Length: 190
Image (cartoon, rainbow, N blue to C red; front, side):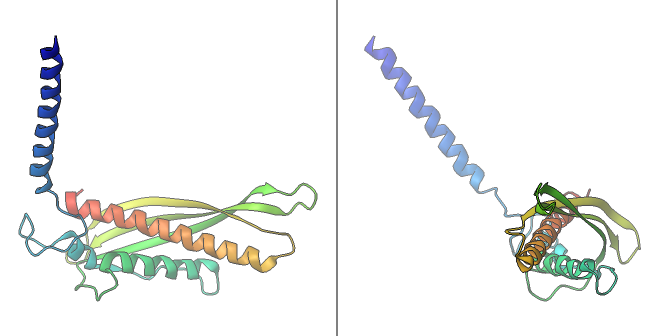
């Protein structure tokens, strides 16, 4: 009966060896999605180059309102995400974004009726338009909800800073979601 255990062990090592060989062969097929490469499989520009050619239009919001600062924050995050911080390519598409914001008290102190935890939300609608044809190729909606604590009732500046951090985090989430949707469009064409 020792031979059945011996063949079982050889079978396990054989399967492991085959799996490692297949993994090694498949590793050569991997292409990083956002990486720079000198030769693409289709012979065209890489995804990074296509994203760099997206002109992110300024986000319209009334001056002096928090939405104006959030719009600038979101646009800056998208510009950095699409161009990598470098100079963008000549635009082939333009991206238009509209924002709405909301705040909601989640936990309220029963003695003072002041909020201890609040949710901050951004809802965004966007459209990507080809510049040459004027055709809208991508439209979508996305949202982000983040919460922030108010550390004490007497710390009004901490509340203001918590709100600003929540706004920044929510705008970064929106920028990541829009960039992911644009990337899927440039890769798959849908």
